[in-house]
Amino acid sequence: MTERAEKALRLGTRRSTLAKAQSGHVAQAVRQLTGRTVELVEITTYGDTSREALAQIGGTGVFVTALRDAVLRGEVDFAVHSLKDLPTTQPDDLTLAAVPPREDPRDVLVARDGLTFDRLPEGARVGTGSPRRMAQLNAYARHHGLRIEIVPIRGNVDTRIGYVRNGELDAVVLAAAGLSRIGRIDEVTDFLSADAVLPAPGQGALAIECAANNVSLAAVLAELDDPYTRVAVTAERSLLAALEAGCTAPVGALADLLADGQVVNGMRLRGAVGTTDGSTLVQLSTTGSVPMSHSDAVALGRELASELLAKGAAGLMGERVR
Image 1 (cartoon, helix red, strand yellow):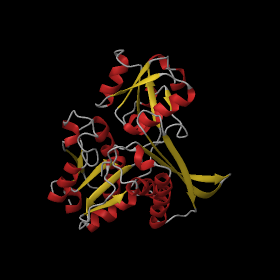
Image 2: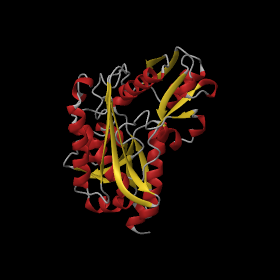
Image 3: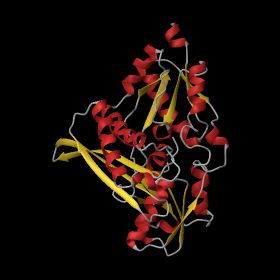
Image 4: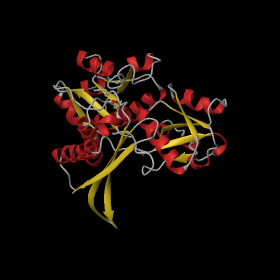
C-alpha cells in the first residue's frame, strides 16, 4: 500500500449538522480527486458556544477563527467554512484554495400552514437572527402594507424551525442553501426573491482554506474551484469590505450573470443597506463586463459601495463591525 493511500487528510469543520453536511460533500470530492481518506475533525468555535446575538460578540470571524487556528497549528490539513462567515481580509498565512459552485443564494421562509410571506396574517411573528434580513423584511413589509413583527432568534436549523412547529413563531427565515445541503428543502413554504431580499455577501457559497505554505494541497483543492462563483463572491465581498461592514451588518449583496438569450453579456452586482426597522433602505446596482478578473470584481464591488455611501449608507449601518 502506498503512502498516498495510507495518509488521511484531516478536514476541520464546525460541529453543527449543516457544517458537517457541507464538509462531508467537500470531503467526498477530495477523496475522488486524491484517492486518499479524508477524516472530519470537529472543532467548536466561539460562535457555537455563545448564546449572545452575533452583533454583540463581534460577528465577523466568530465561526471561523478556531478552524483557522487549527489549520495553522497543523491539527487539520484544511477547513471548510460558509463563505459568508469569513472576514473580508484574507490572512497571509492561509490561502482560499477553492470556492466550489454556489448553491441557491436566496433566503427562504418556513411558515406554519404553508404560508408564503405575502400571506402572513397581521401581527405575524417572524424569526431571524440577521440584521440584514430584519432591515429588508421590514422594508418590504412597510412598502406592501404588511404588519409583521420581526423577532430576533439564534440556534441551529432544528431550533429555529422548532419555534414554528411549537407555535411560538409564525415563520422563520433561513438560507435556501443550508436547508438544501441537509436535505430539508421540502420544508420551505416560500422562496424570497432577491428583488425583495438580497442575500448576505457570499451566501450559498463555501470556502475551502489551507495553509499558504501547503502548496501541493492547495493545488489539489483548487480543482474544486468554480471561477464564476469565485468572481461573483469576490465582487460581493469587495462591496462589504469597502463599506467597512462585518458579516452581521444590515448589508445585502448579490452578483449574477446577465444574459441575452444564450449569450452572457455581463455581470450585475446589487447591494442594499438599511436600518433594521425597515424605515430606510438604500438599494443600488451596477454592471461589469465578462469574463471578469479578480481585480475587476474587486473594483466593481468598490464602485457600488461608493455609490451606496454617497446615498447615505454609512449612517444606516449603526455601529459598524470590522
